[in-house]
Amino acid sequence: MNAKQIDPDKKLPVMEAFYTLQGEGSHAGKAAYFIRLAGCDVGCVWCDVKESWDAGKHPIQSIEKIVEEACKYPSRFVVITGGEPLMYNLSALTQLLREKGFAIALETSGCYHLQGQIDWYCFSPKKFKKPVESSYNIANELKVIIAHPSDFEWAEGHAKKVNGNCQLFLQPEWDKQERFLPMIVDYVKNNPQWRISLQTHKYLNIP
Image 1 (spheres, rainbow, N blue to C red):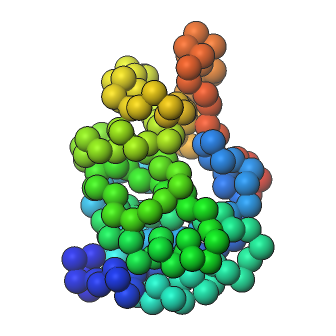
Image 2: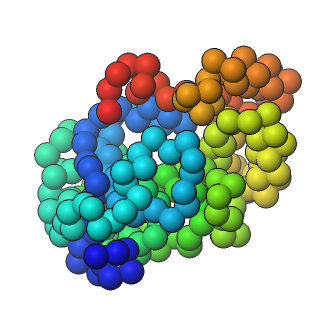
Image 3: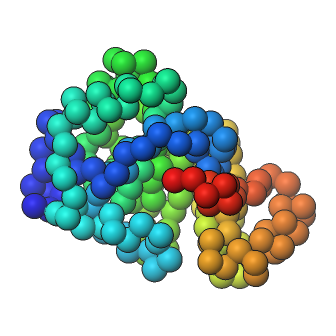
C-alpha cells in the first residue's frame, strides 16, 4: 500500500510513536509525544530516518488508536513529523487530538499544502523538492539545515519570504556539525535575526 491508497479520515501509516523531549528548534526541551508518519517523496540525501520513506513498510493505524496512545502520557503537546506528514490530509487526526486537549506542532518540508488544524508550523525547506507558497505565510518557525557553505545564502532566500512573526533557525547537519557549527555561530553573531537549533536529543542520547 502506498500513500495515495490510504484513507486519512480513518487510518494513517505510523513508522513510530514515542514520548520524549522535543530536541530541536523553538520548543527544544519540552516534553512531547511524537507521531512519525511513514511516507516521503522529498528524498534528502542526509535524512536520518530514511526507513520512513516507504509507507508500505509500516503499519496502518486507526486515528483513534494513534490518539489513544498519545493520551497515555502526561504532556498534551504532540509533534507530527515524518517522513513528510503533509502527504496526508491531517484533518481527522488533528481534530481528534484537539478534542483530547493537545497542542499540535507539525514538522514539514512545506512541499504540500496543510490540511488540518495545528498550533505550530515548523517549516524546514529542502533543496530536493520545492515548497508550496502557502508554507511561507503560515510558518511559525523556519528551520534550515546547513550542510554546505552555500546553504547560508539559500536560507536567506527563504527568510525573505516567510511572514514577519516567523522565528528563524539554522541547524547544522548532524554528521557535518564539527565543520559547520563554528560557521553558524559566527553567522548568527553577525546576523542576530537568526538563532541556532541543535539536535539536543542526540547529545542526550534520547529518541
